[in-house]
View: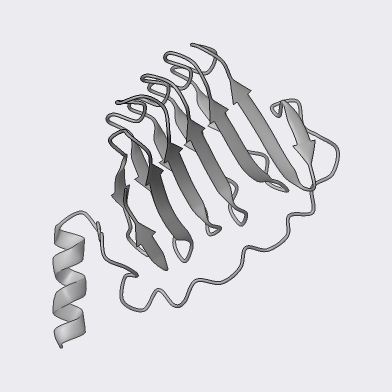
Length: 165
């Protein structure tokens, strides 16, 4: 009964959980190795099954960046408004990370995670990730890492781990 009340309270609060896994989400496990393949055109480069998407100032603003399914995904937003008000759709099964290195490079960005580990690194000047949101996937380890800046909001519903800045 107590677990059901805790789960009900978490759902009523939007599913956020800043302390750890949601009850019954299971332990975090290592990400599966993506098969990769021929590097898709959405990727700036590919290495070992990881698609790297590089966004310079304003280049990916107001867009939806869809990571290819057979790859883990690494998005680098470097420059003013590089990924501002964008949506990143992570692959269903593989790791996905966004790095924000400049003032407002990831402002209001929404990161939609799959089942793999998922995170956002905010290491630019203050406000590199202001207003951003990580929508954690079911079963994946979800985290934000911040250095000298405010971090994203995390919606941890179903994540095996949840680490805010």
